[in-house]
Length: 411
Image (tube, rainbow, N blue to C red):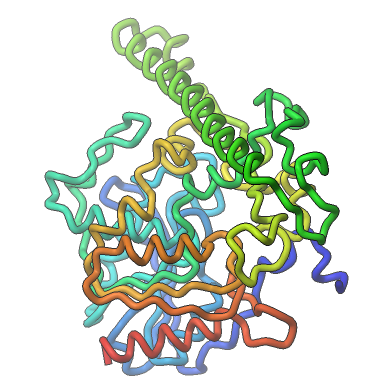
């Protein structure tokens, strides 16, 4: 291994190609239906009549590796954020739908003939969720978040996109975290607490020293996955208690006008969720076999990153936990949303993915309600990196298939 590949975050960042010299770039501030401000970047090349919209619930995609690839193939590209870019603390997916809707309205107003959503990783479920809700009559859309807060999707313009592309989509932030969360945590206030019977990094349970593949027994895997679900349920219960405490304080303040009740209603009841980088498939390459490298989305040493600062859903409000990170409570679940998605769809599976495994890809494609759906596989890792040194990047290979698919439908 080189020093570069030994870094804890190795493989996460991929160098992008250069955009065509004819690209015209503009930055836009949009106002959502509920008054939030979001921003986006529109890149247009001469003659582009189809625009591809890239979005992720928690990341800035302005420099996504597919941007120059799509521009070079003659498509305009729109990249936008949510009101929670790079911020898990208050990410509520129902609000992110209003952010996505503002972008879709903007693109229709710009006069493009066709608007296509492209969801990579967590953007896949976000856009599946958007298609599902946008396809409903306004009166049938969600009216409350999982924490019970009102959300006015009925009052928002939610244009339906003309097609959907998915690249390495995982099954949803909550469904993903349920696979990643370390169930050996016995004390939510202690990041080092551990039940040795569930410790995925204990040789007694099948763990091998990196980079050798571990080998977990079927019995351990069954106990581990059941315990992961149980930990999610425990955190759900804690989140709901804190939501109820805030709601009680708001009710008291309405009747008493007591500043103490007002402060209690406003006080953040933030959850700290330790150790969320512990999917057994990160270290046991015989589980859900594909061409992925050893390690997690955060690097080559999940036995270390699991204990570090990075990781999904680590510091969140109860509302954000229930809406985004709970696999038991979130509405943003690919398999649940996909049957309502009827637009032409392309699903790009990466053969070395560490978040969307082969059985996931099959299930998600099968779940799509589209009569016109295509499933392709390209060699690459989750973020679009090459499957091996010297090979083409997964992003470049994916872009070729995406460009061909789009051209046959929106020439």
